[in-house]
Image (tube, rainbow, N blue to C red; front, side, top):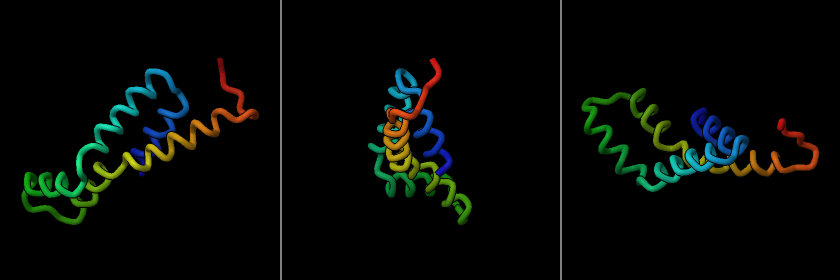
Length: 86
């Protein structure tokens, strides 16, 4: 979740080239199917415990949250009462 918050808020707030690059990175992670990727990574690492599975899930499941957080950040950023620094 912390990866999703970092990427989503940064992308939505800064916009421009930063938004394009972070959105591209998010789309790349969304293209890979999560379950087969987890199986391949777990097989590559060998004997894995619950901590490794948790880390792998965190690394592969952040893009959906980042997309939602990015859209919400952009919606709030464009409100009338928000004054952005120039």
